[in-house]
Image (spheres, rainbow, N blue to C red):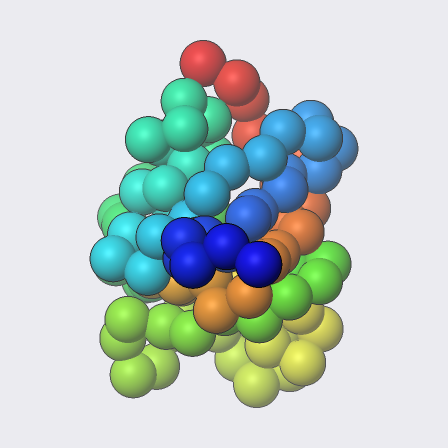
Amino acid sequence: MSDIARYPLVRIEPLGLEFDAPAHLTLLEAATAARLRLPRSCRNGACRTCMCRLASGRVSYRIEWPGLTKEEKAEGLVLPCVAVAETDLVLTVPDAEAL
């Protein structure tokens, strides 16, 4: 077994592309570094432009209360602009584009 720590891996569907998500980057920042464009606008959890579905995995948030209702969170919706990957993830982002 390797002693090298690995970052959580994020797969964007339906593109099928993957990128590493270091804990010091939001999902949006990590995607941008990997040359993927996710929907975005405010980048602070207020506008909800980046909202997408978490198909699998677990995230945490950089802000206490991101702009999601309890119902939206229960439905698996996340805001990548303020979310950090805690585990490997699969996100459904129909408008994502490879750069």
